[in-house]
Amino acid sequence: MLLDVLSTLIGFVLLIWGADRFSAGAGAIARLLGVAPVVIGLTVVAFATSAPEVMVSISAAREGLTGMAVGNALGSNIANVGLVLGASTLVKPVSHELSAALRHELIVLLAVSLGAGALFLDGALNFYDGVILLAGLMLFLYWVSRTGQRLRPDDPVMRQAGVELPPQMPGLKASGILLIGFITLLAGAELLVSGAESLARTFGVSDLIIGLTVIAVGTSLPELAVSVVSAARGETGLAVGNIIGSNVFNLLAVIGAAGIAGPGPLDASVITLHYPVMLVFTVALLRLTYNPFGSPGIGRTMGLALLAGFLSYQGYLIGTAL
Image (tube, rainbow, N blue to C red; front, side, top):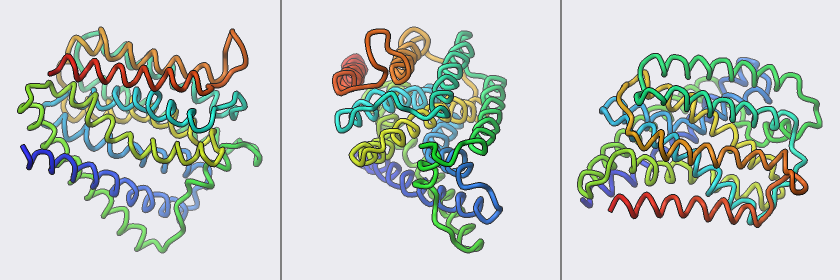
């Protein structure tokens, strides 16, 4: 069992480090190709931050662990709102003064969440579901790119893109870093899935629960660190933007890639419990732009409620699995 724990931990470390290298290399190459900085920040860098979840889900789906792949995506979305946003608002409440681009992206997230749920209703994740989700990803990337090109210079998202933009570097170096990041991501995903699968068998826990708990929380830790630091600096828009973008990519890219790499049946609890929980946390984000009882935004009380809801959900999963 010790080897399985080490494999899981090393897998997490490689995924986090590899994602950082992959993001830097991809962003630098995009800059050399003349892509606008704001488009790089909203597409290339945003996709790279979800690369660990994508690689883990592909690896899990190829091993026939469809539950782990889907649980990773749903659990990460729940963790991003309940853990990441909840903890961030305890540091600095999020005001309602969000960028128009983020408000529109929030509506897109809600629509994508509902669409993904509709694909789950047949109780399986199949190849065509994956094609539909990845086609949605292409449309989303196109929409974000066009939106980014039309943003005003003073829009907060422009500043966000500048903060996340990788440094410039020669093409050969950028290509090397991109390749190293990609290989590291592959190795990390294989180690993590292998270790997590063995741990699941040891403790008699389903791969779905492992995906919703250990893997989802572990792959969300980088977002937690970035968002808390951003909130401490008063950049709450950056924290919210990271969460919304990451959740869209998790549903479209992570589940879509899993559907193509390894279609399979879904546990009934995905529809009856885990997807509804994710949808509730997603709907809670609407508080950022609409509040019938007061000013929009998420204060510390609401943030504490999100964090408590997340911890309660994780406690329930662990309690019922053991």
